[in-house]
Image (cartoon, rainbow, N blue to C red; front, top):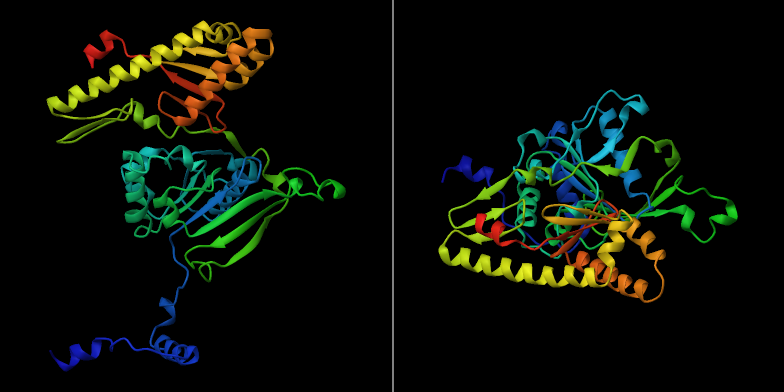
Amino acid sequence: MSDQTTALLTREVEEYDDDSDLLELATEDAEEIEDAYKVWFPTEYLVGILGHRGGGKSALLAHYGFNCLAAGCTVFTNLEMYPEKLGLTNKPFPLELDNILKFDTSLEAAVLLIEEIGTWVERKRGMSTTSILIDKFLQLVIRKKGLRIFFTNQSPLLPSGLAEQTDIVHQAFDVFFCDWAREYNIAKGTTFYYMTSDRTGIFGMPGRTWRVALRKANRLWGTFNTNQMFDPFQWARKTMIKGREQVIDMETGEAYNASEEGIRAWQHDVAAFSIALNKIIGSYHSAGFMDMAARHGAMTDLPDRYVFSVHELRKGLTNLKGTKRQHAESAYNELLSLATQGQLARFTGPYHQSIELAKPVTEQQEATT
């Protein structure tokens, strides 16, 4: 090894008992670096905004988004925003889950605003294909492509892959809900505060906590619509991922091996799925629940599923009396339980406005599949 090469190598790792000694050495090392390279703040990071609805999550997300647009950044989001109302000419691009799953190169050096990321990543199904792909996206793309992501989520329990990558967490609260708010006549939705924690040290020190306030949030009213989001699974209506040993149908969520044995096992699962649905839907008819839902316009009958409006179902239940109401409410509570499990039924909409209940697979559909 030449002397020149040896000079480029660092010395062995040394131990120091005194912090002041280490600081002195670090200062000495820093003197060798040109000022142009002393950019301490990274260009890529992940910020989570957590809390219950009405706490100011979307307001802070929109605030970050509008500031990024004003700075000329390229912004992708599934939150409907109206920057023109603030005099901004820079417009955000729609963000679909497909952009992430395909590692879209257009996202490089961009800002991503994801409203209700829990609708994209399943905490209870960390090994699902979608969760695995998003986890890989976070690991491989964010830290390498200068990508900044801001997301909201109602649940503080994030999937492990997302939790590990998140740098900053804001826990959102509306000052209106404080005990003393009414005494001082504080208006709802005008002042939000956030308990903020630095998880990775990106803003100073790991574990450091402080408070952040978003004042005069009423100025943002009307500049975004948290009730209207781009469907993150719109791409899935037309996409199928195929592999040598496994086929994943992103439209139906079914996965099966390409071998004969795998197909037979899949068909057995479909049959069991249909038997369970037949029993459930039959019990709903017997309880008068389906008739009540249809009569009050609370149910849409689609070829492959029923779609129930939670709000209309509740209105319909209030019009029933006696045992009819008891039976219908029992069916309604069971439907809510199934939607929570997310297998035979699931909630849809940012605020769980609707419930989709799958229909049994008919013999003709099974033969076609």
